[in-house]
Amino acid sequence: MEEAVRTFVGPARKKRADQGERRALEEGLAQTRRQINQAYAGFDCADDPDLIDSFVFEINALQARYNYLLRRMKELEGRL
Picture 1 (cartoon, helix red, strand yellow):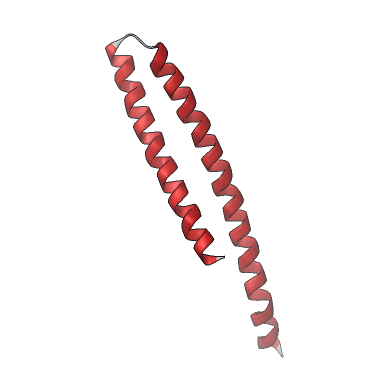
Picture 2: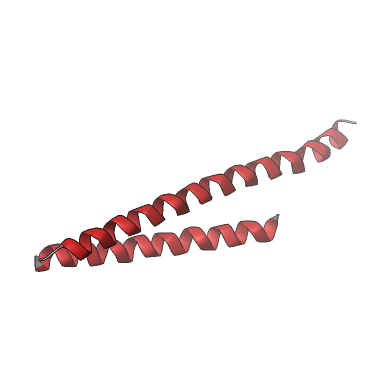
């Protein structure tokens, strides 16, 4: 009897965990999009070469983070 309860509760708990991860990924994607837009705005206003370089590195890092989060979201969608 105890085994049957574990089997029944397990998938529901897993689904809630996946939904929580999905919400976290969605928020991370939205936050990263905002940060990318801010970095582009700073890049557009910058005129110092060192500052321009820093915005380029920041934009590249944020785009890499965005790609990672998007890939994780797609992997999660494949499991649901």
